[in-house]
Length: 263
Image (cartoon, rainbow, N blue to C red; front, side, top):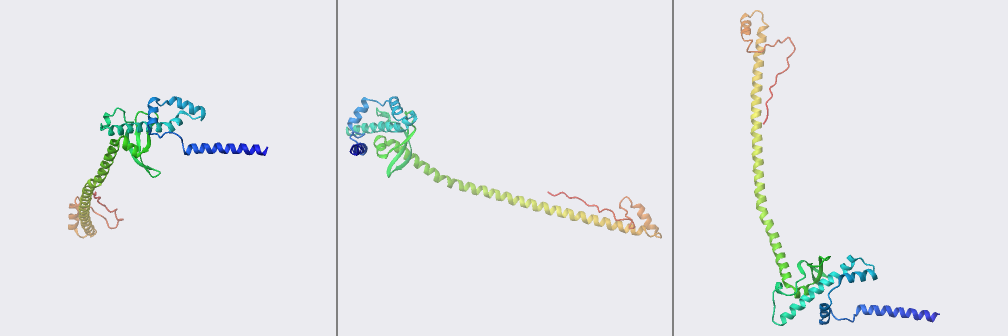
């Protein structure tokens, strides 16, 4: 029984080794070989059938199947375009991208990237429902549609120039605005100072007039207290309409103040 168990374990081990060897050293044609291109042209990609197979064997939803397969399908179409342009170039025919019979699946280059030390591009695909962007090798994109790389580099250079020009154009505007603000603040301070000086002079003159009135009134009252001075009494009765008479024997009246408005 021990021998039978050992045989089963060794058989399983050999199967695992064969699977690993098949994964590391696949016995198949390269993706850009003529045999693969010929088969792909004869048998187009059957998306729904592949989704059903993955759902049956792996229990994958259609979205997960598309996540794994659609980038490879798009890259396969891009590789087909690269082979077509390479063959045309060898025959001496190099038409522009818009005149190539096979439509370019790349809409534009989004960003330049580096994956595991390899130069790559993140591209935006066109015509693939469920796939927007993915990363492809730079050499593949260069051989298939170098015009897209040229457009991306031109756009990137233009954006850098605009970013360099913006700070230089903003500095004079900022300085001019700050100068205007400083001038307005200086004028405002001058207006406040001139208004304060005018208010102080007005208040001083008003206080002087009040002091003079009080002195005259006090003199009149002192004259009134003398019963033998009839002339003073006559003058007092004549100027009653002009002066305010205050009796020194009575409590001091409330001081009258003049309110001066400030600017």
